[in-house]
Length: 66
Image 1 (cartoon, rainbow, N blue to C red):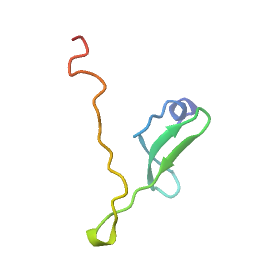
Image 2: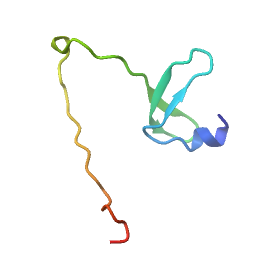
Image 3: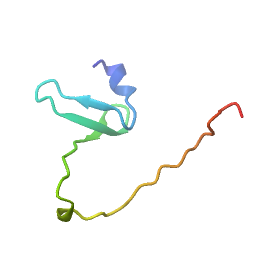
Image 4: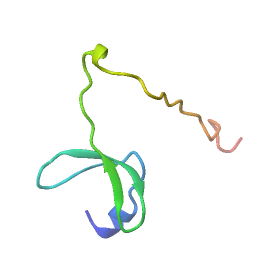
């Protein structure tokens, strides 16, 4: 990745470290540094608690020219 590519990362982009190969999801870009998180496999529903549920809201109409 080039410095420009790093600077152009957006939330939701997935990147991978060259040495350990684990993928992370970008959660924020602050210019000179990016914050990203790893994921885990979730199984055995009984072992998990739902803390918060996110609902996506479309901010643009289907046809931007409308």
